[in-house]
Length: 227
Image (cartoon, rainbow, N blue to C red):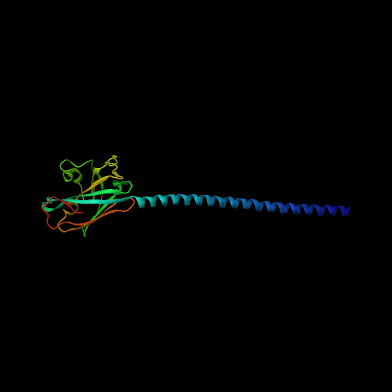
């Protein structure tokens, strides 16, 4: 009887040991599954973030490459104007003809015009002063678009076959041409003779249109093409 009891006790101990090992293995297995699940979730989240960042970078790069603007011509109007009780015989108004480069679409409402005479750097933004076409007497007779201060520019649509240029959303696309108008009297009391001007039309994305010119020494003409 004593031997039989001892034998049974050994059998019980053996099976208990096996059961303990099985439970421990199960705990380790479950822990591995949990760790693997967490790691997979982290990888999925990271890959989603990288994909979103890659799409954004690609879109930004495309905009930077395609959204360029060209300055085709810069023209000034010469005359005598009274400013603060003083008469100045200078260039008092200016237009900058711009067009998009390639097939890009540029909203001039988001553009900034920089002008420097070597002393003062001015930053001009669109102020919703707009004309669909110049008046019959010419560009510089379209007086409303030159009624501006030193931080504003206006717009005159020149070529706009698809009607994309409007007062609220002056967007130029392939084939469009627009005139950016500047009141030089407000900016510099007019531009005197032999003044060096550097400027840029800077779009929201892409390369700016750059213009450089020197006003003529003597002129007998009212309208002068600077560039």
